[in-house]
Amino acid sequence: MVHQSFILLVFLLCITSSYSTKFVQVDEICQKAKNPSFCSTLLNSKKGADLVSLAQYTIGVLRVNMTNTVKLINTLIAQSGNDVKALTHYKMCLKEFVNDGGALFVLGNVERVLKEGNYHLMSVGANDIMQDIRNCIYDTSYHDTSSLPSYGEVALQIDQIIQIIAGLFTA
Picture (cartoon, helix red, strand yellow):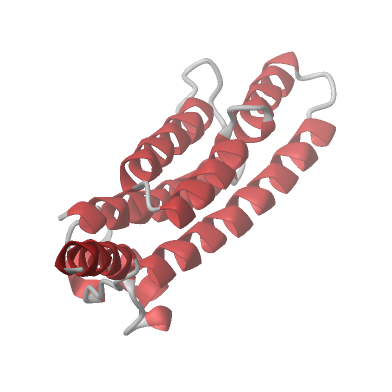
């Protein structure tokens, strides 16, 4: 009987610890960001939220940003006309965002592994997203004067916050 009670206690402790909430001050997250002011502005609307809620919120903000970026890229493709360099660049950017393995696809995986509690894969996914965005906005073969690089920079900042949050889960 004592052995069964011990097993039950260990089981309950495991369940409790896996569902425990972790609260972190926004300042603790944002002091690690390249742009702390941007981070604070973004996360302070969720002040007092636990780390999972902050991660879910930030993933949602990034999804909206990237969806708007894809709309912009499609507009830029339509406006490229006979400019082969521009058309090639914007089509490459579109692939970086929407293809299987592209930023939006990976963001869905980041959201899934967050729910599973796999924070290491969450961080890996956020890093992959960052690379996809960089491939587009830092493409040296085309000097992009559109607003696309600005959209990309905002996405990079949001994604960095996701990476910081992923790291805090294991800290």
